[in-house]
Image 1 (tube, helix red, strand yellow):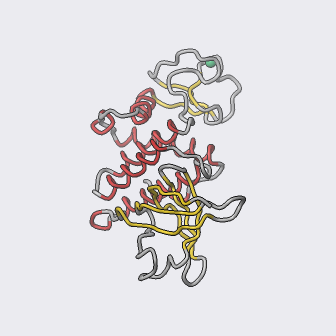
Image 2 (tube, protein in one colour):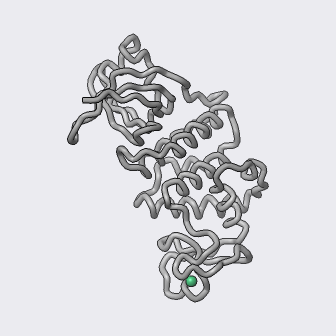
Image 3 (cartoon, helix red, strand yellow):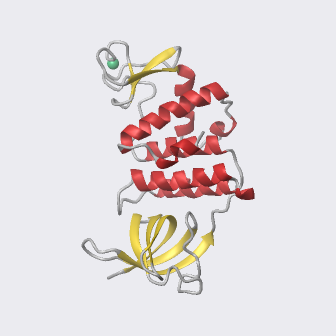
Length: 247
Ligand SMILES: [Zn+2]
């Protein structure tokens, strides 16, 4: 049983016994890992309350074969998730990051870029940065990294250019925009404005700073949220629990 070391974000924590926890961790080097932390519920236990929900810690764990839970042996807290002023919308947005990491990734499927994005997002939310903007940034970049980003400027059926101008057909089940010819007879097609597609494209860009400064009027934000919410519901096969708190 090799001991593995990595950085991890605690994305779920369930009481297992009077003293132990079963944790779901999103790790930088191994992706999602589920492990038992014996003594994890004791304040003066081996983990010294390092296993806070959404906290970043450096862990050591023993990787079990077959379907047994991994065993967490060490955890050292690097950073807690504590939104400034105990702001509830920042807190819910943090829980939403955890819900998406859990729902969109498989066990032992590492994505370092996604780990770093989650860490950066939780730090920004802790620091009181704008919740709506950071939530969208996280959603769109997570979709891009995981290969689920909808097609925003080419017809998802035939590949024809679909300029983001006027109203554009967006196939929720097809995974992106549709040209006038391909939209015929399709189910669950929404019409969205070109401006909404441009916001999504900008939010999904790797690197860059433009998404931080881009003006998004409240009507536009409503359309963007509606589109992303429905798209994620289709992708996950259920409505994320935290959607109703995203405004
Ligand atoms: Zn087409």
